[in-house]
Each structure stands twice: as C-alpha cells, then as structure tokens.
Amino acid sequence: MLHYQISGQGSPVVILAGGPGFGASYMQPVVAIVARNHTAILLEQRGTGRSVPAVETPDNVNEDLAVSDLEGLRHTLGYARWTVLGHSFGTFTAMKYAIAHPDHVQALVLLATMAPRRVDDTLDANLQKRLPPTAGPAFHDLFVKMKQARTDAERNDLAGQINGLLLPAYFQDPSKAVGFVAVTQSAGMNAQTAQLINRSVGDYDLVADLAKLRVPTLIIQGSADPLDPAMAAKTQTAIPGAKLTVIENCGHFAWVEAPVRLTSELDAFLANN
Image (tube, rainbow, N blue to C red; front, side, top):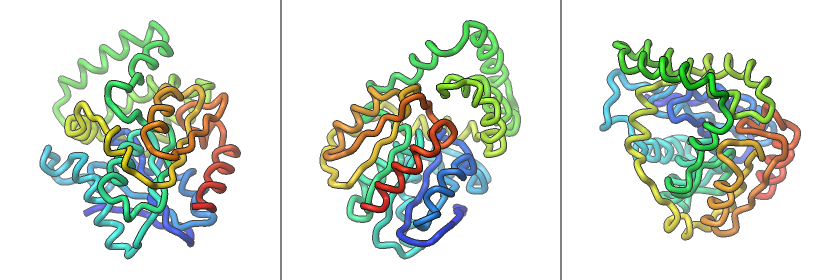
C-alpha cells in the first residue's frame, strides 16, 4: 500500500522526492510553499517511508511501477490533470510519467533536474571535485561495511552515513549541510530501493520521448548544484518550450539556500499554469 499526505487547497500538485530511496519528509518545506495556494500531494514512493513492501524484489520495486503508481494515485484522487513536481531523482520519475501520460499532466516542475540521458550525467565527477581528499578512505570503509551488512537496517544506516559525508558537496555553503543531515536521517534512506530503482533505470535516454512533450515546464537549478546547470540546460533543450532558471549561490536544495527566490519562482509558474 502506498502512503501520501495532502495539504492545502486548489489545483493539485504531486511532489516526488529524490534519491532514489529517500523518505519523502525532507520535502516538507516544498510542500509548505506549494500548499499555500494549491493542493500539495506528497507521495511516499514505492520502497520509501511507509510504502515499503515486506520483501523488495526487482518485480515489485522498479521505475516502471513508480510511474504506474503515480497514475494510479491520480485516478484514485479523481484528478483529470495535475502538476508533477520532482526533486533530484524525482525529476526522472516526473519526466517518465509525463512521457507516459502527457494528457494528465498540467505542468512539470523539475527542481535540481537530472540530465535527459545517462551519458550527460556528470554528477559523480562533480562530487569528486568537491569532496576533500580525506573523504576517500571514509567512503571506502563504509562501502566495505555495506557489502558485509546482513540486514536491511544495517545497510540503511550505512547508506545514511554515506549520505552524511556526501551532503556538504551538494551545498554552496557546506556549513548548511550540518543541519540538513539530521533532516535526511529523519526522512530515512532505503538502500535496497536505491539499488533496485537504479538497476531498473539503466543507461537511459529520454531525449526522443521528451521532444514530443507539449507540457509547460519549469526547471530550477542551483548554480552550485553538482547536478550542474550544464546538465539542466540539456534537459531544457530536450523539452520543447521549457524554462530554465538558475539560482546563483545555491546548491541542490534551493529551499535551504534560496527559499525566497524558490518561493517566488514556484508561485509565479504555478499561478500561470
């Protein structure tokens, strides 16, 4: 069973967290922005939060099912169309959903978007440039422990520790990652879900399918996001008519480093679409 939270009133906006595998609660500040003027639906996606199957397998946790879940939720809630807002890996699911169900998408909002093709993804290279040399041994030890872990709880705890080491590289101001680590740890990270979803995505290429979309699209990218503006520009090029807004002095989590600008951009786009 999938769980979700509904806040506010007005035109519907479904909100997708990233990861893959992150619990959705870290997106609560975005929910609060959207819910002031719209109905915000925060989905705990399959394999996260309270929506984790008793036993996870490639047959019950994969990206195709993530897209099907979204369409099932739209049908259950009775919306003819809705806006789909994704963050980080959630933008991939948002784009896949729009490709599969364009008639049911009012608009797309891609916060810290992924690239339209796997070969355009420079995230790992960008992270390596930002991490201090001392991070290498710590990551190595954690990955070794991950392979040796016997339970999902152990693996998830180690995935959370890895995430804690990575987070400073996602911020323009690394000191702001300190408080955010606690937020993501509270949200939870499901390592098994991350592995299964990434495996199901593979070496993707959405360019040809995105070119067919006629959906109003806003892309918001921080200038210091390791999912960098160059990647976002390729997504903008792939989606006809998409608007790309780059927020200066901002990393991967715009609601932490540039909340006023993010609120302004979201308010204006959602009001007009």
